[in-house]
Amino acid sequence: MKKKKDLGLAKLRYDFKMGGGKASFTPVLEPNALKKQKAMKNYYKKVAVIELDGVPYDADVDSIAFMSSVLSIANFRMLEAMANGASTEDAYNGVTSQTIPWKDANGKWSEIAIRDIPGGLEAAMRKVAELAQ
Image 1 (spheres, rainbow, N blue to C red):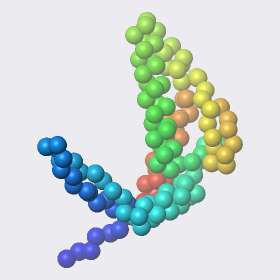
Image 2 (image 1 turned 60 degrees about the horizontal axis):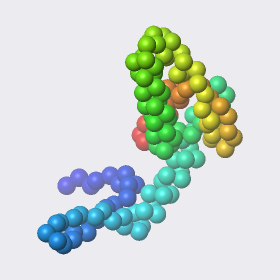
Image 3 (image 1 turned 90 degrees about the vertical axis):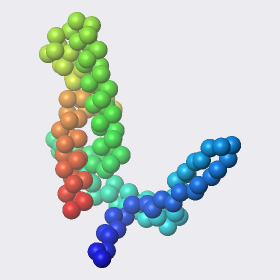
């Protein structure tokens, strides 16, 4: 039998409760697994860094989620502008030229253009994939 590889993920146990005719399963993190998960997250926060135009950016899972959220909102705003009569080009340029406050990997805040985020997202995802190998 092949031994399963430990991915460092928190192990879940489920508490089963019955009450009022309803059954519920509640995920409960095991204490040691939670500590291990936090340690892995801190490790990736330190090593998962990308550089764009000379500026270091975090490339951890939380940062990837934030970049994805910003792009989802930008996408919605672009569609909204087009629905209100803007051309595709005008909608794209209007949304992607806007800036957003962003904290780099050194903790320094700056304004970055939304059009730069897709490149950062792609680089971050490549970095995470590289670290996972």
